Length: 460
Image (cartoon, rainbow, N blue to C red):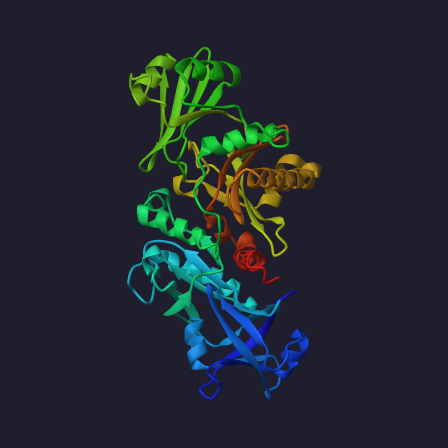
């Protein structure tokens, strides 16, 4: 049964041990006056009796005592679902993060605006949606002091802290690997899982090597994966360079393009190593691979590549002589199907190893780029990117613990039109949505968060 949007109210004259439901809702749900039902808000549950109300429309009235017992965050419009003598109100959605500032105007610093965009995008669906950190959870009373963003009388938005039930669904947005590895963050996630109440999606940053193993050994996705080895020996790197002429050395647990080296081999000129350092792009030439490796990675053969992987370099299509790859931003929709929300084309900065904006990369319109490079085959290449991304997402989620609802894929297309996967991000950045051509896609992306939460909470 689908949920519907109802008006909830708290009234002191309501019987303390009853919930008043309007005649229209009673008939729609098949409720009987005086019957006992279970009422749920997040993890809070009470058994109460139904009283038929005389009010019109789709209304539900709680007594102050019942609202307190359920930890109802606030009255107003929200969703309701009735089945098997159980009335579910909500859903309650929690965005888990870290970095609370104590500033009521921006409780989560610069990321407050990001969370506000998620809340605004899903506002029409009327869930209870709050942002919280592990420190805001009261495990003894099983409540959360979550931060809501609510419209005030003047039409503006303001942050407010309200006591709330545990969420039906948790969208994990811990900002980085360091924060995610903290013991109290891991403990919070573990305890929420143990409640069997909260469904958590997009938990955990990905390890590059684990993702590579999942996808490179699967018959449906292996064609998209460049040749890659973990903790390579210098002999392996040399063979890769002889075979491909260009390779990348990447930290196996890194992100944001940090610590990446590109090495190219020219039989007559030697070995060239390019990387980003501070604010500069650096290029050095060496006569031998051994000298290059020793210069940057030391002489300890057992340790120097312990946390690195070597990956085949791909000759990407270019824009104004700059290599281009694509950020494919994906979401699960309200029916649980993968959708490609946006494809952002990223041109590398001049002399740069990666296409990250922070190192000089820039976003360019995808349709213009593909038409310029592939002409009449542009639409076919775009469809190939989308279909490949959806196939890869499906393969990956079959091998990951816990549901996935959002992914960012870094995909390349070589000069022959072949699609390659370079990386998958569990918590993709949203910088591509700053480009004017992708702003509407950014709003749709934020809306999909709520849509998928409704699906996980069984409200649609």
